Image (cartoon, rainbow, N blue to C red; front, side):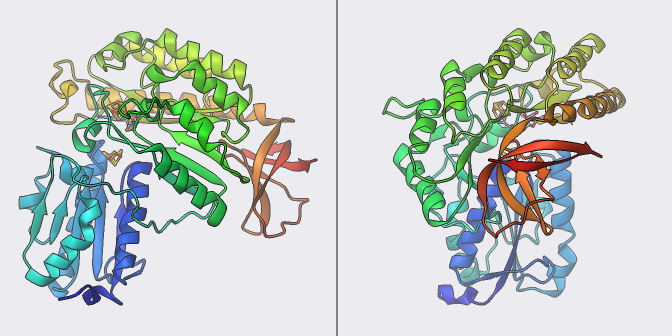
Length: 444
Ligand code: SAH
Ligand code: SF4
Ligand code: F3S
């Protein structure tokens, strides 16, 4: 049977997890569209449903698993419906759910290393009607070059490095994503150039589990800051963001590039995980809290208006009340623009899962609530710092009103401005803050 079997059929892709997965789903949508299929919103009606899963915490696994199981009934009445499960959860060994045995109604189960082959798997399944279960240990070919169907028309994700070599003791990612592998500079350059010059993208977000490791595995003497500098030579009205950075590899060079290159957005996501050096050591993070404070100080000195966000884990094994209080102290001191806080979730196969001093769920709950309450109070104060400051913004229209989007993603409403259907960068000064909403004017 030929590819035309899928022509005119419908699909839906359900995504869990990080930006990497969001972007991979854009590639999956590209693959399915290239088979002649059309995307629809209703997963109950779609002929092909792909679940692109995440296993970073138990909650992510539960959500995906329950939603997949919810399709079982529909599959029983619509036998031709094809259900695919891919991504980190299927790649995981000894996860909470054994997908192979627990999801017999799922037709194709593949991992993170063979998503690029999805079209072939679908065609084979259509020919044989035999269930496919194929998890590879290593990537067999690159997913790069697959045409993406992107959701967002202003921001485009671009992979620069895959995998992770860090092995933080709590984290499953290195086990499901493999070792670090940088994409060649030329490939990245060409992709960014096309997105900016031919497709009109205004923000490019470079993706990697640890972008600062970029180039370490390449022959050419490449570093992340060199790559950034090179990408800034691309002509056009655009800005570059990147995520995620690890505090260990965060170089002074990179701070310099962030400060000096107008095309590099003045925003940074720098996960700290804990305010306690003792906990950081047991997490295998390779830095202490002093080092982290030092980076923040250098960054703010170089770029006073920088937007900072972070990730925090509460209730890591052995975290004492004193350790936790050091995390509270950290967020009071740094006043991040945004915090993503998570309760520690035991991941089987990671070293921390074997630690004996696991923290009770009740304590984890109490701690995260305390942290979030404090964060709310800090936020009330943090937003005041925007007053009377000027930010380089992308001018867009949201719900009929002109809005300036700062590098850090904050929206500044510009009620006096008539939007002329063109997205462009301009300086916006904040003149009013009400109910957490900023408004201002464009300054020449
Ligand atoms: N590579 C990125 C993102 C990793 S996953 C980084 O290094 O920052 C995103 C976040 O999930 C992490 O920063 C961490 O805060 C959180 N996380 C990872 N494993 C976790 C676990 N087992 N329990 C709770 N949170 C976890
Ligand atoms: Fe996980 Fe640490 Fe790698 Fe981030 S750096 S993906 S937290 S192991
Ligand atoms: Fe989840 Fe995989 Fe990303 S485990 S956080 S989707 S790399």
